[in-house]
Length: 307
Ligand code: CUA
Image (tube, rainbow, N blue to C red):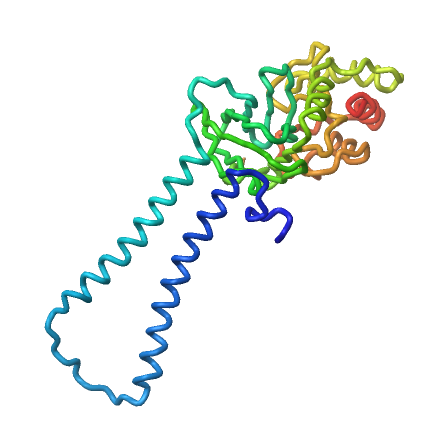
C-alpha cells in the first residue's frame, strides 16, 4: 500500500470512506463483467452469422422488471451506504467550539488553536486518539482541505465556515494538499498533519504558546529590527513583538517547522535565504514580495527567524 494512499487509513473517518469506495467499486466491477461479458459472448457465439432480419418479439415482462429492478437496487444500495458513511464521518457539531480553526489563503494555511492560544501555519499538530473539531474558512477564493489518509475532502469557501471531524489513531506525519485549483500557487499549498501522543502534543503546544525567543546573537537582534521596521511586519505576526500582520503566515516559531512556503521547500537556512531573496524561485506566483534585500539583511533575517 503506497504510504500516502487514502486506503492506508489512520482514522476511523478515512476507514469508513475507504470501505464505501470498495463497495462502490465492487458494484462497478460487477456491471463491467456483466456488460463486457455478454458482449464478448455474443460476438464469439454469433461470429459466423451473415446477418438476418431481427425476429419480432413480444414484450417480455420478466426481463423488463429485472433490468429495471436490479439497477434500482444497486443505486439504492450505494445511496444507503453513502448516507450511512456520511453520518459516521460527519456527525453534527452542535454548539461545540472548534479545537482547531483554519483559514485558507492564496497560498498557505493559517492555523489557530483557540483554547491553547497557539497560532501557526501549514503544519498542523494534533494529539492522537481524540475527536477534534476543525472549523475551516477562506480569506480569498475557494480552496479544498484534503489529507487523504485522515479524512474527507472539504471545500473551503470565503464567508461560509465549514466543520470537519478528525480523529487520528496513529502517530505520524500525514501529507495533504489543497485540492481545488486556486491560482498560481495551488500546487504549493501543502498540508502536514503531525499526529503526536497527547503528552508530546501538550509539550509542543506549551512551547508554541510562548512569545518568540529573545534574540541573542547580533545578527538576530538586527534581524528583529529589520523585521519589525521593514515591510515584513505588515503581513506577518511574531508573538511578543509589534509585528501582528495576518496577511501572511504567523512566523513566531518558524524555526520549529520542517518546511517553509507551505511545503514548497525544506526549512533550512539556505532555503530560507533563497526564499527571502527571490520568493518566485521557490514558489512561482507567490504573494511574498521580493523586497530587494541585501545579502547582509537576508543573513540577519534568517538568523532571527530560525532562532
Ligand atoms: Cu488553495 Cu488550491
